[in-house]
Length: 64
Image (cartoon, rainbow, N blue to C red; front, side, top):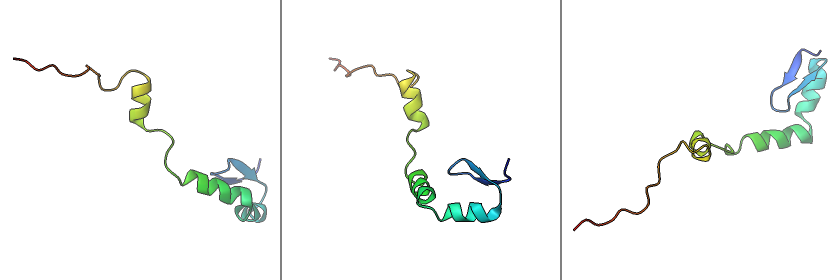
């Protein structure tokens, strides 16, 4: 297995020359751009989806 690794594309390469050529490729640049964007989900999103978020007690009623 190659010892040269591209973290963004999850690929191994046999030598540094091949890896450096990969860094110049369109696929790698596209992946870098995609990964540098906003995170797809946050911890709050995960908790709300699991039903562990803030409770929704509905509208508060006025007391007289």
